[in-house]
Amino acid sequence: MLAGAIDGGGTKVMTGIVDDSGKILSSRTESVPPKDVAAYFNRCAAMLKDCAAEIGVTLDKLDGVGMSIPGMTDGKDWVYGSPSAGWGSFSALSLLVPALGLPAEKIRLENDINACALAELRFGGGGRDFVWLTISTGNGGAVVANGELVRGKSFCAGELGHIKVEYDHPVRCGCGGYGCLEAHASGPAIARMCREVGLDTDAAGCAALCRQGDKRALSVYKTAGMYLGRALAQLANMLNFEKAYLGGGVSRSLDLLMPSLRETFDRDALPECRKAIIERTHLGYEASLLGAASLVFGRQSERD
Image 1 (cartoon, rainbow, N blue to C red):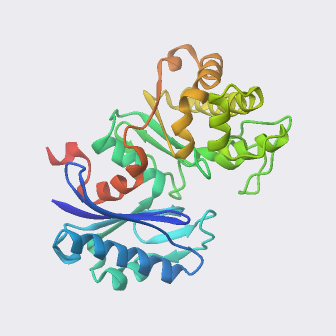
Image 2: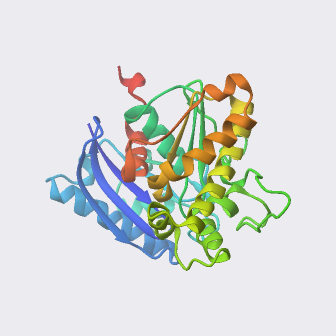
Image 3: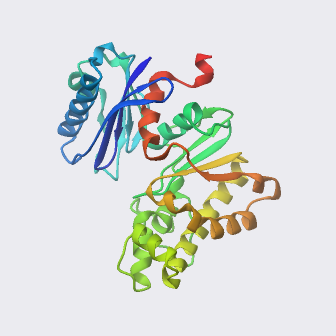
């Protein structure tokens, strides 16, 4: 089986042809401005066609095409909006069907972090009760319970980045609220905390300074880890999950976050919930792309 996969980011797009073992046979990555929605989706389709041509097939010969969306979606057609891409609501299929030249029934859509969780079910570390949290430009999330993705009544479950983690000195979040995890432990939040302690650098630069022993940088990562621990402890007490998978660019520095993250988690989580495993996803940079392919393939258990 072969799937076309589109990982639609707020600015970065990755496309690929993926087989049902999770092997990426060809791929393309570009910076695609999202402001013009139609042009964005047309470029995604063109990139995917190039990937298919590279291995000598056309899109109509694939088993389907999956796309991970950087925003809230009903998982069928409608995108409700994307703060990171600056999108309002629109029908994705009305753009993808003509751009891909495929019937609607061969196209699948999902929120990008939900897609990451589905990839974890099929290709990754597994488990039937887990949360997936990205630490990147924002803090997106997904919840899997008893082997099923939790969507919620309005398809907006799993917005873990908007758990409140700070009440005494809350920072305004892009959602309009205050004290959200995303405002205190995302990549931009780490960069802001760096500026507050006199460091002119981003999250990656801060991590590099941590490894050189810079005390100010270490304090920033300690604080960010504490906020992540607060959020995960709240989730553990509610969901009693088995694992928490962390992804996104900042998760590459999980070793720097983990001491204060785990200390806070073990302090705030109930005793039985402290048994949860917290680790970086094994799917790496391609998690969302593999998630898009998983929309076509389904879970491994469904195929066995």
